[in-house]
Length: 619
Image 1 (cartoon, rainbow, N blue to C red):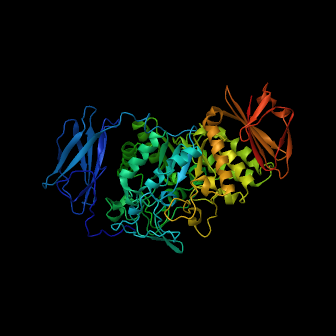
Image 2: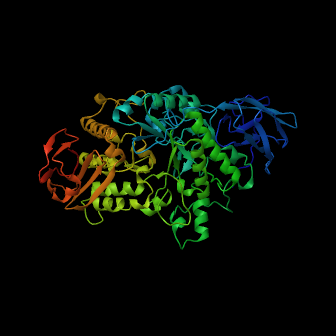
Image 3: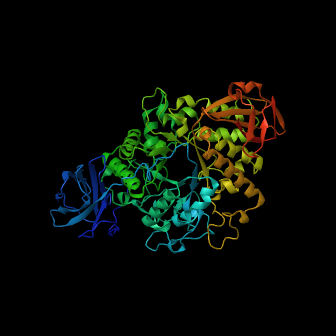
């Protein structure tokens, strides 16, 4: 299954000052002042490396050198004491070669000005950089990469969007009410176009990582990422990085020239994952089903990392710590979380928290049921293995929102499904840390799911911005970008109109948007702005009432504010008697409609428009 070793030399430009240009080393540099004093260097060459090395630098001690069966590698374990000063030192090998390694000074403002964590106070905007905006056309094609196609007319090729394009539109996002940006992976994806299904496609989405220490040059490289994070922080915004622990692209150097036989999960012939997370919690599950779930490959060109191998685990853990400190990102979203070795997941979360106490992590666990989602985070369940992740991508809530928007409320249909789903929040340690959403890059676009009906669209956005959790909006949802995943994911990953030279429309501006698009944008902006100033919506408690007669009511509240949220799923206007809600309404006598700005006395009845979502602040 492993690729044959290639005969050419892989020259990697890194920040080390090497006296012998045939070494690669990972991490490329490190920091003095880290909480964990241990550092493991992976040194790689195209030829055999001497396993004997020496280090001489105050505060740095060589603990161990390990050489795997592939003599192109050595692993060097160092101890960096608390007293170690920033600087550079030589690692010398017995064959006379040496490499120079740099220790920088760890940032003193982590947790305040950078690496701040992402919480229910925040509003996330998910961007696929290649499809959002092209800020620097000069980087669209990199002749030294395996894929040199940049062709907007091809829905499966790269289109040229980049990190600079995201930075150019920070003010647009801030105006919308967004304060946190999650981009699909920006690290290097030096892969040729690959066969997926019936078509060749590029790694424009970012999930085929070939270097964990370099931002893809087509996105602008490491400097562009530094610039974006710094610019976002100056505007009071945050950045989430998308991690992939489970697999790498097949042109990753550890696949081209594997350090050891069990670096990847190996099978006699290709074995895909069964994708059944039930095996982790099923009391009747077989060992082979669990092995295939974790060790089976996602697709043939994404080799599956053996995260139970301590060297593999250390490589991934250190790369995540490195990226956090290097760029100052505020949180992590972890792709394919449920496919990873469970103990590894807990270990990496502990390691990140040790270095960055404010950091937050939420994992992608695409599940249908609340207990399955809750299993992968800190929970209140009695399970054999206890996960320690803070939050999860809340697919059960997404599915329930779809039902609430599309169906009249019944016992377990429509808003009844949403009521039932939220009633199971007792399984989570803290459901406020879950990321809730209407759509993403792997799903049908929400406006299409809502039948391209603006009223039902507003119902969904209203739920997104008032329910518990961390809301996430997929790029373009605010301007009614649409489509189903037919015939492929490319249909839900269209370019943002106005982000590219020559676009006939610029929907980053109100003048460039159609009337209905402005209506959707303004609705989202107004509710997001209100949420930003409402502690009850951001951090408050929830009280929900059983849906009756097609109407679902819940309250978000704290000691100083009460917000009443009402979903009318009926096709006709409906009168709602308020006597039933006296427990939460209490002695409040008036209500301000957040969307209209009107304040009215709270009488015994409210008249609700057909297919509507109403947000009232009670006074």
